[in-house]
Length: 370
Image 1 (tube, one colour):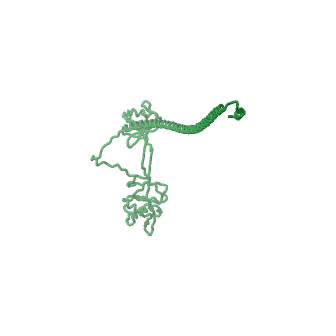
Image 2 (image 1 turned 90 degrees about the vertical axis):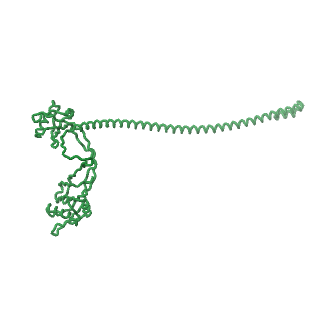
């Protein structure tokens, strides 16, 4: 109730009765109470809306963070997928390269197979040679053992000697005493030094062979003068009507009585070897000779190792005090004596000073370690 209404109630009491005034007061109290209640409801509604706004604000912030986090995750996943794609592309490139490599290897393998087949055909058509068996038969346990005796060209400097003993233990004794006093008689002595002999020996030897496109091997030839034989073969195979061509050289292999004929061009030899047998006029009569491919061999792999001769020693520091033969005899006598640590000598070779540039042939039956 406003102050004007209170004033009017006081000033003009006669206008309204007390009951009416009380009723009005009661009405206004109710209105006031309603306004207070509405005010409370509005405040509560305001608080609810503020709380709801704060809740929405928090949810908005959380959703914003979640969205940013999802963006980061999606970006990371996208990078991982790109990396996987790049790796797959790289794998694809490597697989393509491997396929190309395998195809090239297959082509090379097919070429090698064709080459080996050609070599097989060549080996199957080697020149024939008559063999007379003069040995004795035996059981499976009597199989002969293949062996080779080394024939070594050993470079020797002047004032050195090579001695091969019959026993290895003697050579070890001599090498165990590096210096030796050799008595030459008449109160003359020389001091020599004993050293092991090291040789470079092959460990692995691989040889590749291929058919020479310019050469042929002629076999089944009659025995006759070699010069005349070469002339007649060269004349025959130089004629185009016989399938030949211009001849570069003609050489006879005396141990097998075969002839190696070389053409100037590369397209002649194959036609003659494909035919294989040819009628050639030799010694005024026609002979059926055999023409086979000529195979060239090249060393493709050679592995060596140093090997010490077990029974041979090298003597160095030998002065030129007497002639070669006498000094060699004195050395042999000295190293044969057991009192000097020596033993039976199988071979000895002395190279006097002044022959450093010469290479002397030293042949020994000693089996070198492999």
